[in-house]
Length: 167
Image (cartoon, rainbow, N blue to C red; front, side, top):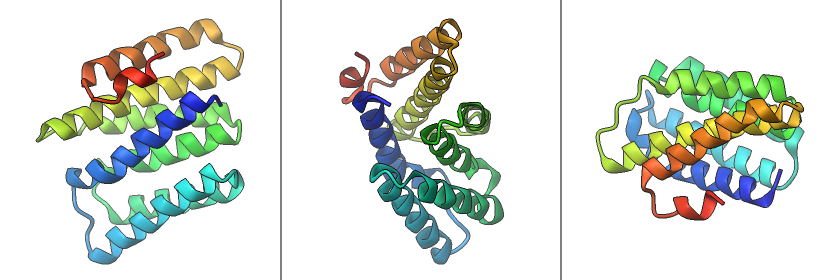
């Protein structure tokens, strides 16, 4: 994975950590703390190259979300699994999780400009990730429309950082 792709993921996930909590509340403070712990652990492990450990945390995080959170929050589970499986070169599974992320995000309705930007950026990142998987499976021609959709979403987001990640 190129440094630009890694940075893109890091920016989007960091943005998710800040803005994503606005899309719905966990059932308890303990749920929020557990989610934050899994999220931080996943980011630390994946960025330090401990991919197998990161995948295990992503799978526990997904189970936690599915057990304790409203349906509208489940996109987070498939988002983390999609990225984690991509790091393990499990591209077909990664694509399935990213497609699921896109489907699950359809229920999100932004209430603020920050939420709108977040949703559009996540759609773009999901498309880019699918393109990356297709490219790594040797299906470059199939990947191109996903990369184009990524550029379209990031441009549409009008996020201040979007231009630096479109090159």
